[in-house]
Image 1: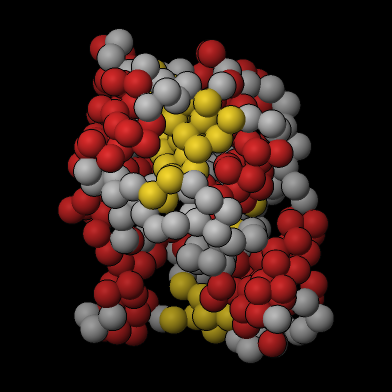
Image 2: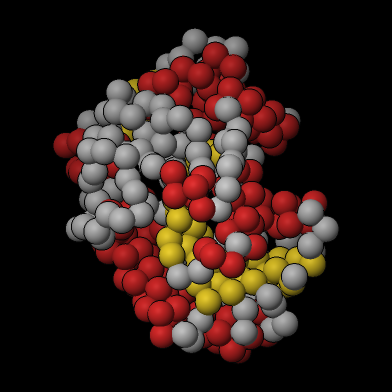
Length: 305
């Protein structure tokens, strides 16, 4: 199998490259800028460059994304370009997806939920997933979708549980949080996400569906921060940006404005049911949070040193 990873410099993409390489697979890492370990450079907005990047592939992992502030404007077109090139190569497309499209849910989310999100990012994710699965049903592209929740792990700096959590934990400074502290939330661990996606890519029966990826038990933000800080040798410290102040500051800060549109994910339960994966793809044992947090802290400590 020749696997092409688009977005190989990102949190999930880099772990896909690492896991595929460790498994002895033929891997082509593709990013918009040169990677330290080598790989191809391509502007994934350019159809010709994408076709060249995926030529000869058996499976293409779509882990690329535009800037967080530009999803509605750029993400659907980017994904369509990647889908066209993957179809021309005769390869399977594995979309690295999230859970935004469902909107608020009081019970653990399953793949059968309707796409009820009203925020721009959730609607964007819904549009892309629908278009890809329509192509699969039409027989023009073999598509698999794997959905992870908010992640943490080595190299996962841009997540809400990334550098803004693990960086302060190393020094004992307060973690800055959004939403409620005591609502249950599923947190994905990056190496687990990569391993689960590769198993989906290898499973013939996975095609034409979205799958929720395995993750350890939900934790509230308070519980996660407490585990991280205690593992780092500090007492947990945290502060929450109140909703009205978040909305006000978002008028002047583009990233905070984008995060306000998805704040609902942290004001109520946001948990995942991945039972379908376990039943139909096979058993999977997620890395315990305690082990995952220690590994993540080691990475941040080495990076800071």
